[in-house]
Image 1 (cartoon, one colour):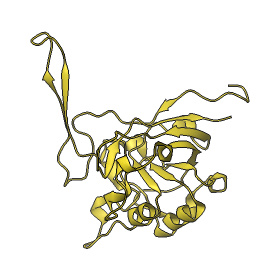
Image 2 (tube, one colour):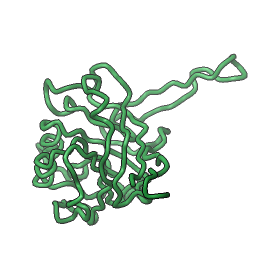
Image 3 (cartoon, rainbow, N blue to C red):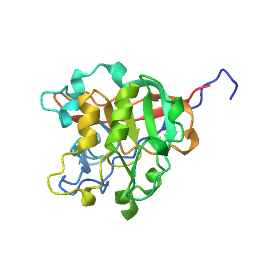
Image 4 (cartoon, one colour):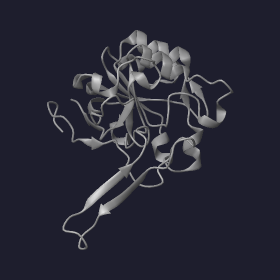
Length: 222
């Protein structure tokens, strides 16, 4: 790749299949054939899932009463330049700005993809032992003026099994209330690690939805 070239697009999305990791209170997703050839003249797939399964984007109304739904947001909120920011954090660790290897390269209006390496554990028990953002780091991203945080984990908040009674999803609350969108379950970040990138996280245009699945893409910038 020359100094003026951009890289090839990298698919950052998990395939939507039965058995995807999910919050235990969510129903299991199902993807089945409603009609199949040769019994019928065409194939038709039926999808039954909540919008917060697989690679997806959260809209502010996911946690903010009266906040914008996914179809209220302009397309420009889901696309643009940013960085795949390396994160040094371990199992169950709550990390702050000091864990961000590429913190100084984060710019206003960036889409920041946080690479903890946890995408490699997708579908295994360790995936549920993921690190999470501190409340201070959430506020730092807001002050930095980024427009989206994309995670290779299920959530920016504590793992489900570590949440105390009365848990309020504080990191979601801070980011979404400030208009910083959240993408979850991103994968395949290895070859883009530490790079400035162009990303596309355009969600399905579901009326009134609090989130939507995405086919997330990124490519390295010169």
